[in-house]
Image (cartoon, rainbow over all chains, first blue to last red; front, side, top):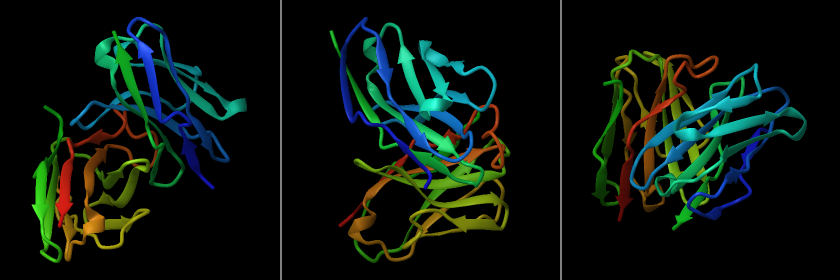
Length: 112
Length: 117
């Protein structure tokens, strides 16, 4: 079955610390992978996406993600978190069919 | 500005009273889709449309209808709303439904928070 898993429901980090949000997918082929961010009361904004090629993808706001086929993972990272990064993050994958599979989200809290 | 516009942003209604949530995009996208977001469940697809007059069910279509008479508009219709349809709804569009989601992925609206009492 096709699915995407974000094992961490809530993560708290200190401002300036590094961040890694985990994402694992289940799919028989290489999917199209996305990370979206949702700030409180806002819609979803695309951070980055992976389709093929270089497995380390750079996105907006200083985020990056690495696709690891052997681990079926697409973890999101940021070297130094800012207070404005507090939000909910969704890992999303698109299979060959016309559907997006959303993870359940990881809520990020940033403490001073 | 390229965007997906949903209206209304907030809606409180009573059980059984028909309602429509509108969605409009100004990017000439062929693909449009509706999702509902519930705590702990992420976003789940309700319906999608690959072009004018072409719609199909997503994962949770029960209790919803859609139409795609024009390329830019994709309204979500609840003929007889029930409390279990209380949720946050998002409309999204993409220029490339078959492949990568287009250069900018999928563009989402700001959401409609619906409460059915």
